[in-house]
Amino acid sequence: MNMKMIFGIIALALIAFVGFGIYKSNGLKTIQIIKTVTINGSRQEVFDMVKYLNNFPKWSPFFAQDPNQKYKVTGVDGTVGAQYHWDGNNGKDLGFQEIIIIDDLKFIGMRCDIQKPFVAKPTFEYYFIETNNGIEVKQDFKVESGLPNTFFMWLFGAKTEMEKTNQQGLDLLKKAVENK
Image (tube, rainbow, N blue to C red; front, side):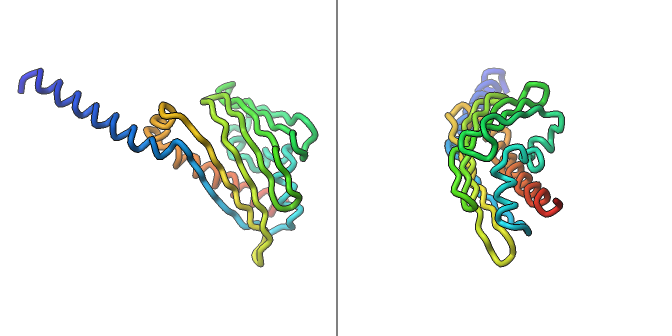
């Protein structure tokens, strides 16, 4: 085989890989992850664990992964406009989440402003439903991204990691309420 043919095959393989990646990453422009957990506790206890941002370190998967994370709550905790600011992994993770809607004992809506390690503005919606087995918490996570970001998200399996992280957070929420 001559060098020209080898480079041609390599170039064709690279073009095919990038083309496949762009095709697959198009499906990641909008990511929605819905997870649920049933918690043995009162509706008020479960609702307050999410509503009061000072409780977040008790069930945050990010705090569990980085216990040295610095955080502060601004505004009136547990009300619309309250914000949870974080700075973790020695300055590599930075952002805040803000409560934007509260429907007492039924729903909490939050939006995030992530500045590091990437820029994103996901939303989290929490629904609280009383069942025979306890309080079901449904978390509805959504994030939208542009094509360059989605390509890297596809390349590194970010959606799978997001799903694991969201489930870890709900599992920690359950533990925080049930082991009070």
